[in-house]
Length: 274
Image (tube, rainbow, N blue to C red):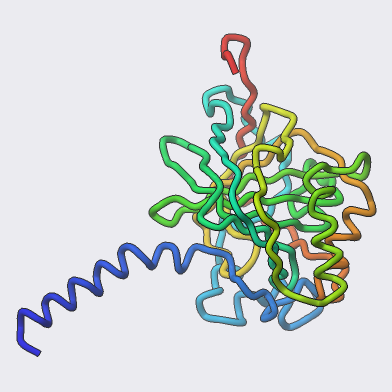
């Protein structure tokens, strides 16, 4: 290979690293069978950072998630602006990743915008019980809407649920959960799902910088936790957990230290027309 060819191939490799690597390293793992949520296991959450070298942030990171949204550390502000969601219906697939059920939109399902950056909605999944807590209180379920920017940064919207009236999205998903549980399959096509039907119910939200709550626990995540706690039926919680084939009671990572982070709570003022 002559010098020009070597230089050309080096340039191609550099472009591959620049364009592809952010997406390769920032996503959650597709197969969760390598780790568990059993705190007494050598593959449990206190040992995730030891399973693979590229997961070492799970043990060493100081901006880890989830956290307790402690009100004495919260700064209330109207400067963050309303949650700018521009979603659209898209074809989707329900996937059993090992410890959770993930609904993945093929090609994305619209975007959100945070501080001038556009993040594409790629998938959602559920944790039972909730991973985040509010003033020490844990809830029955937490939904994560996972978005990614072109340069590989992650933005997650979290919605927490307590037992009460059924949730409309989960009412739609229950037949698919039951089908996966019955045949022990790992993937099924769901068809067109419109994320605009996911109810938030509040303009208020918490915002902080943190990490993925599963390996590799990378700390490039902008977290938005909806202030309002919504409701879900007990049967719907059971339907989600029964569809997962790991026999675990929970799939929630233990709380992580807040360290020196401050939390922000967006509260619109009377002059904002949202």
